[in-house]
Image (cartoon, rainbow, N blue to C red; front, side):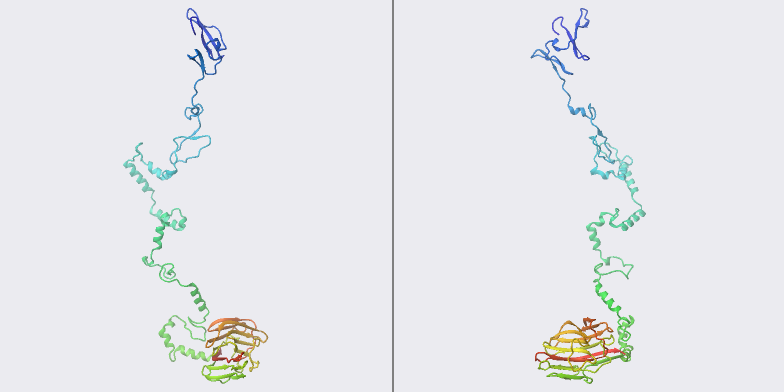
Length: 481
């Protein structure tokens, strides 16, 4: 207002207009008029103010200027405690309680707890021991009292398992092995493992079981481990024996018990009239052995052609020679032999021969030929026969049925002065086994002869005019009578 008699104005908030007031001589005020514009007040910068604006005097312009109030910071309106539009917050958790993730409608409070690094202290048993009997007494230092410490120890002692419970736990560990959660990591630590592996058997007490324990080097370092293959081989060989520990048949000498292996008693049994010596003599009565060692050449007939020759040198020394003329034959043979049939298991036949010259460019036979074949002839692969063929130094196992023949290269090369021990064993007409120096070289099952009477033929023939000589050291066959 200005000057005497000026008007006083007030703002009507209901109608949003300024209302002039007038005073009387007695000091009473009365409404004079209602205005809709600040222009009626004069000296006002704007005709219409905004909501919540206030008039302030501007000395520079000499006018009243409406100004809007300064608003508070927007973030404060969302203060969770006293904001006009507070945000939702989740309640904190206690140590030992599950710390939930929360929801999208809430924020974590500043006094919430993360227990990732301290979960061990929320274990139920540890927590119970920590708070037992007022263990924490000072809210600032958290220092436990002496009594509280004792109470915690007592609680821990009470939690220890009894001897029976401990034994049961150990048994469970052994039953479940490493999968048992009770097993402590200590027992799989490399150092503990090394100590266990380094333990020596002789540092332990003697075992209760001394029969089936394996004391081999692989387990306890006491002895080399037995070769299973060799043991199996020995077992298989002994299973084929028929009498005693080392016997091979009722017709042969055999040990029948461990006691009989005593060397002193064994030697005594081989003295004159000893039990084993008598058995040998009796066995000879039950066997027929036909041995040609050239103490005599009776029962042998020569067959020679060209420059061939048969020379009886001495005992164990009969020579058959081709001479230098090509295709010349030197040989000798027996008559029919009823006890000579290499097809039968009862008639094994053996011979020992030696080449006195190179065996190249020569063919020699040590053979049982079918009775009825002309003996004064050279053998052929297809005639009925069982025996050995030496062709240019290579030794072949051979047999024929009168139409076809079968022969197998034994891999033996009889060069000059090489001696070979030959053996033929039949299986009763189904197969023939050929051995050289006691090693099986061939087994034939095809083109076997069906005859059971044979004669023995030994001879050699050359093919290029060079003399070839074979020595017959001995030949023998036998049967059970």
